[in-house]
Image (cartoon, rainbow, N blue to C red; front, side, top):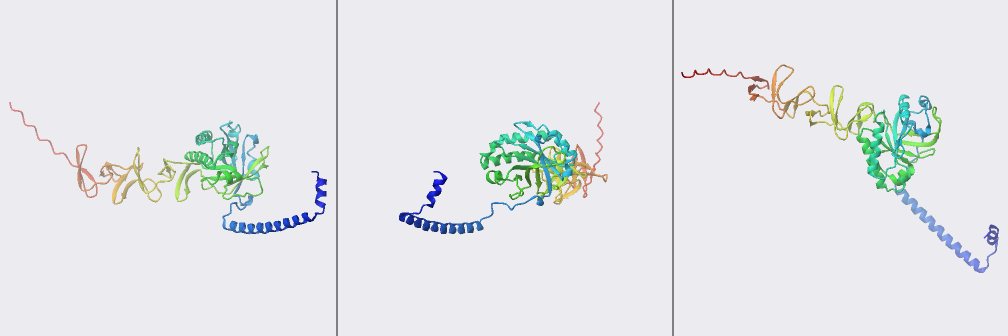
Length: 394
């Protein structure tokens, strides 16, 4: 039907039957209108009782820092000029399992470090199962090993292969990749679009870098926001992705020393958190568990010896220490001693196999008898002279 014919029909006067039909339609529309209003009121009441699904919008004014992310598409960058645009951090693309190392990765890492920028790294993921995600993480750790990475390491989950995966599958990828990155001392962050986080990925136990190209970010709890791909920055010959940071990482990722993790302490060396090892700091040694937490107030034993870790700060104790009423001695390496020990006062003391100082006892060590006095000082008992031999009968 042409538009002109349709208009003519709309102007034609109705007959009696048509008038009755119009009245019935009017009453029906009126009834539907009241029903819609009632439904709207009910829906509004329900929504008032429900928690808000969407975030309050946040803008660049709420950010603690401004940064960029770069790859081969940004060509050769004059990094010395970049900070003049107010840029304080950068995420550099390392590459992907499909294309290998980004051809500008080395130049970008060295240039960003030299310019004094906080420098993180990201990998574009093509993984569709946990094994592939683990391989991506291992590969990225290998690629990063020769560079200073003093900002988060990012898992970029946005490829077409991820769009039809379930939330459980996506979270398995993320947990596998990020736990591997953590085990190697880096701080993991997950990147994707706002809609992917809302509709597919859901809640995860890692910081989020959320992409939403708009004047404000409508997402709760993002650590970073990618706001546009059309930024302009001094020293970069192409348009560039612009990012804003909302979480302060200055006390989380540090060069060297202790950092807080809730009520625990962790230790960093060259911007990498240490785990399951001994560390030395200010002439003291500390042991970190598999989570990287400083162990405190306990005995610890490994192939190098037995130690006691101080209750307050976890440093391995040295010299004369009383633990639950028992005296022990730990050498300059904080290793618990047993047997005969010459202490700095010049006296010899005896500690049994458990390390406990013995007092008022007699002990034999290597066929030598020692008397141990009330202070634990051990003194060798002179051996009795041997009886003269009786001449043999002639």
